Structure formats: structure tokens, C-alpha cells
Length: 266
Ligand code: DGL
Image (cartoon, rainbow, N blue to C red; front, side, top):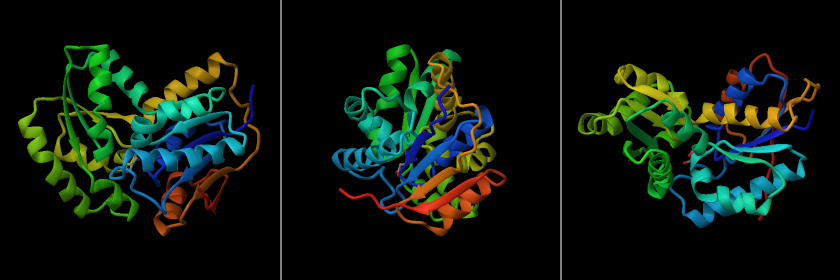
């Protein structure tokens, strides 16, 4: 048993979708979440900058005595997972990409689409990882850079978002033959309703969800599950935007939590 909290982080509020999944699968676990809302989006920034921001956040989460770190961001996973594991070899650090890839290949998908940020698509991490496990799999990828800023601004449930999804995806769906789609950004489950409505025949895989099944396996294997102690979950942000507060209130209504501004220095 290990009652220390699990550390999560993302460029903003997208990683809250992974925490939501954690609460469903492992309701006794406690959370410290860091959303870098002052510097979002990460997906259009350089690899060096993304690694620098991610290192600052993980240093902070480790200083808060977290038992495991979940990088609830595909962009950081794609660009900084290896360097973060090197920096903290004794703490389990999970990224969102490998568990998603394993699930998609395990389900026997043959034709797979991937949508994600520019940085994640540019790294081709999904294409390479899928083909490593199954060289015959067909992968089509598309960057959708406007979705994260719109979600951060509170437009997830609006017609503007539906039009944005359509703008990116109509040609992509028409020109590529896939029936499974990886939501390769943890902000995208918040717009999954639009995708399902526009393209009902496509099966969606959420990178936010698969990592939690992996975390659960690891915690059980290492005897590190919590027994439901009474700490409040903590949601920290580098800028307390109205939308970060509203989304946290909406997703975690009924749970015991604090929201706070926390500034990280270089
Ligand atoms: N949620 C992050 C991801 O999964 C978004 C990155 C960004 O800020 O652009 O990639």
C-alpha cells in the first residue's frame, strides 16, 4: 500500500480527462495535477522548450512526494518521456502513447488514423510505435493545431468547435481509408462528441484513458495502491483561467479538491 498521491501534468486542462478516467477506475487514488495554462499550447513549440517546461513541472511534482508521474500530454510524452525517465530513474513515469498503441494493436486494428498536435505528429511517434508492433498496420496522421487553444478558451461544446473539427477532418477522412482513430491529444476527448456525430462509423481510442489502465496494472504489481486516505485532490495551474476552474468544477463535482495558482521558476 502507498498513500502518496499520483502526479499528473499537461500544458493546460486537457490532462484533466486522464484524471477523470483515474477517478472512474481507481477512485481511492489521490491526485496532484499541474496545468501549465500560462504557457499553453505546447504543441506548436520547439522540442527544447517543451522539454524545459516539462522538466520544471516534474521537478515540482517530485518535490511534492508523488508516487508516480503520469504525463497526461501526448506532446510531452513524444518529446520528453526519455529525458524525464533518465532524470528520475526511481519514480515510475508513464506516458500516454505506449499504452494507447498497445491497445490499438491488441484490438487488431488494421487501418488507423491519428490526430494530434503539430509537435506530436511531427515526431511521428504514433506511426513508428504502431509499426514497430505491427509492420503491416496502415497509419494516416493529421495535425489539428487550433483545437487545443479553442478548448482552453472554453469552446469545446460549441458550433465553432464542430466547424473546426470538420475543417480539419473532412478531407482527412475522405482521402484516407481508416476505421479507427486515435485521439492523440488529451484535450481531444473533450471534443469527441463532435467527432462521433460527424463520423459515426469510426471507432475512437482515447490516449487519456489507456494510460490509466497501465497505471493500475503497475500499482497492483508493485503493491502501491492507496487505501482511500482522506487527502484532498489538488489542481494547480500556472494561470488560473476561468475555464480551468470551470472545467475542474464540472469534471470533479462531488469530489474533495482544492484549486490553486502555482508559479514555477526556471
Ligand atoms: N494535451 C496536450 C497533448 O496531449 C496538448 C498539447 C498542447 O498544448 O498543444 O498533446
